[in-house]
Length: 135
Ligand SMILES: [Zn+2]
Image (tube, helix red, strand yellow):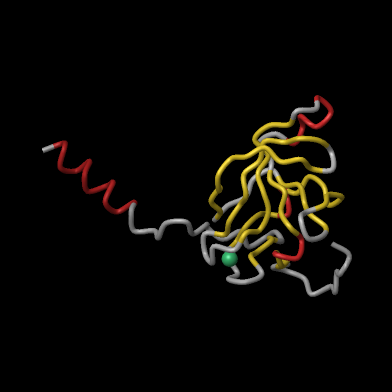
């Protein structure tokens, strides 16, 4: 019964709870300030020199444990962008936005990236307690 064994293997794969990342023990991560869900690896950080809605923001390649809100055109400091708000899956807090499209050619590098509000995140350095406050 080959089809039976196939079903069994797919069942065992579903044991892992949804939306929970495997742990990354060897690198710092950014977590949701409110619910501590893992949002991004520090490795995915592109730039800290961005502005969020309420303060400094990070441009990040890939965010996890998030969902996107409705896509809309928004006039940002660098021009009109097609964006969607980004919400934490754990606590539903808005933590930034996702760049679908940038109108200005010079802003195209942001497309498909995430802008996360610094003050919604907490950096967790898994290894060291070196007092790094400079992030
Ligand atoms: Zn959260």
